Amino acid sequence: MDVNVNAQVRDPREHINEEPRNDLGDLLVGFFGMTGFMTVVFFGMVIIKFLSE
Image (cartoon, rainbow, N blue to C red):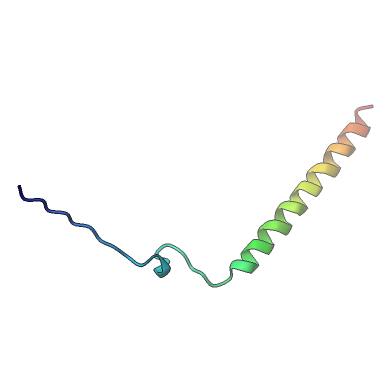
């Protein structure tokens, strides 16, 4: 029985599909962007609630 296995083993530290250059900046932009968006949504809902009374 002949078994041909074409396995390509790569070092996971190569980061083939990633550009690891500004991870902290990306994290902060995402965190503060989402916080700002949720703050706008919150105050928008409060304004809508008071206008509907």
